[in-house]
Amino acid sequence: MVTIRKHDPTRPGDIRAITDIYGYHVLHGRASFETEPPSCAEMTARIDSLLAADYPVLVAELDGAVCGYAYAGPHNARHGYRMTVEDSIYIHHEAMRRGIGSQLLSALIAAARTGGYHQMMAVIGDSANASSIELHRTHGFRHIGTAREIGFKFGEYLDVVCMQLSLKDE
Image 1 (cartoon, rainbow, N blue to C red):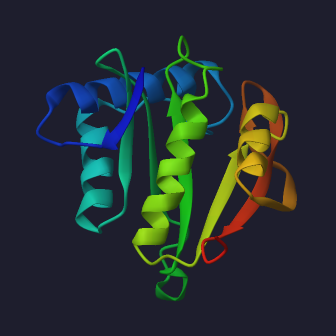
Image 2 (spheres, rainbow, N blue to C red):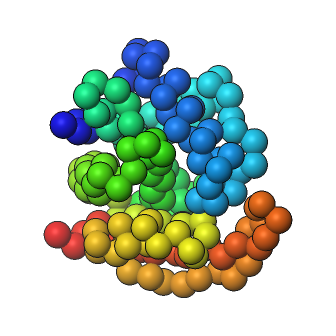
Image 3 (cartoon, rainbow, N blue to C red):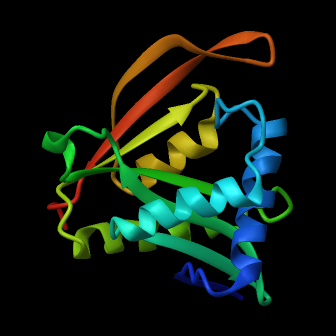
């Protein structure tokens, strides 16, 4: 059974699992355009900065082990964008295709609404990432554009798909 909960910085297993999950996707996937996995210390700093700014950070557990995480962070650092968040969702590669991403996104949308945010953006690395595009579409996100060949990873140029959800629509 999958359980979704808030990330707890006092649980050392959380950050290690988050670092491992993200690191795998950095090395083997095209959803993130990073090319070197961040260290545990770097991921701790990233997550701590989100928590300090009161952004939601969630983890999914399967049989007591962290198998995915999601957060809503700033879409843009400029003050005028403060009511818009951007989501990130990563699932352990062995736990994919079980609906965990959908459960995380559902909980993240609810947390962003509770937090008073107005819009949620999905900036999806690689237009071939059909599962992420469909996940967001299923949760009400609208495709608002595709930026062509703005990323470069694994020797090829990659598109970025932008999707948007109004958090005021129930």
